[in-house]
Each structure stands twice: as structure tokens, then as C-alpha cells.
Image (cartoon, rainbow, N blue to C red; front, side):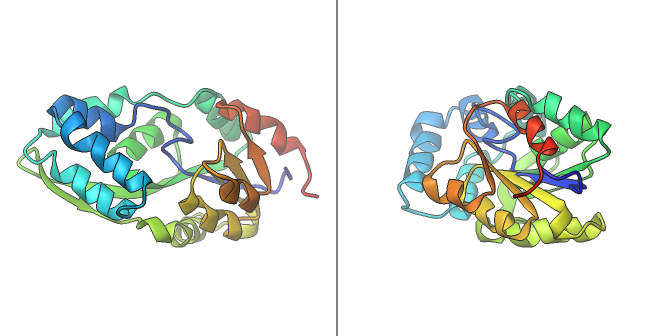
Length: 217
């Protein structure tokens, strides 16, 4: 991967973070995992409804939960193996890092604080008097991660040709097509893998580090 990469834009869930997700953890904390959380996830995966509707259904079940409970769930989400190593490597090289996620902004902000990431774009749960209202502001619709990628690149004053996109899912294909470099990290299917310039199948983000010594072919 060429030395001209100045910005790496990461997907979050399944890329920077591992299971259990903040969605599952919140359902477990509110006692709604078996009744609603698991069925909603299975229905989404089966194509019964789209991701944005899944997010709205999930967050609606947390209505009345305290902000503190959500923060506990956020803190319990594990990092993907090699995440800290890769982000430290990028920082040492002066490469900026950002997140574009269909997940929750509160988790993205945790990562941004921990690793001095430049920017995040993700979806935001609504709060009132320290409690979740059950609503979510879909700031990054499933079909619009490419638009968020371009906004971040412009904000960072980095041409898309000098940015890399890293992700695992169908929504990340848009970013792959816009970025000068792209990595499918443990891609969910062949379509995602085939859309990227590089594929990493090991669940270890440090496997990306050697790519920065490779020139684009």
C-alpha cells in the first residue's frame, strides 16, 4: 500500500470492534435480548427489513434506560484484535484515522477519544433528562456511507485518492469505490471481498500493517 495514504476511514462494528456488539449488550442489560434483540437481528439478516429500520426497532426497546447504562454497554464492547496496534502505527506515521459507521456515535466517540481519531460519523440515540427516549437520529443511513466518507475526506482536506477505506459489510462497498485504497476486513460475503483492493481474512487488524509497505499494482 502506497505511502501516499494520508487518511484511513474505518467501519466500526466487525472492523474496529468485536462481539458482543453494543446492541446485544444493551438488550442484555435491559432484559430484551431474547424477546426482541435476537429476533430483530435475525430478521434483518434474513432481509425482512433494512438496517435503518433494525436500528430504530432496537433503540425503541431501550426507552427509559439511563444514559449511564448505555455508557456501561459502550465500555464493555471489546476491541478487535490488533486494533490498538494498527491505530498506534497509523499515528506514528502521521496518517489520520476516522470512523464512518451505521452504528452508534457513543461507541465511535469512545474509540475516537482512546486513539485520537480525527473524526467520526455515526448514528445518535436521543436523550432526555439523562434517559433514552427510544428514538435514534440516523445520521449515516445504510445506503449513504459513501457520502459520509466524502464529507470526512473534504473536512480533513485529503483527496479521496489519498484515503483508504476499511470495512467488512455491504454498506462499505460505497467507500471502497470512492477511496484510493480499500481493504475488506473479514468480508461478510464475496461481493464485499471482490469490491476491495485487498482482503484480510484473519480477525486481526495488525494484518493491515504490512500493506502500507506495498505499492498499488
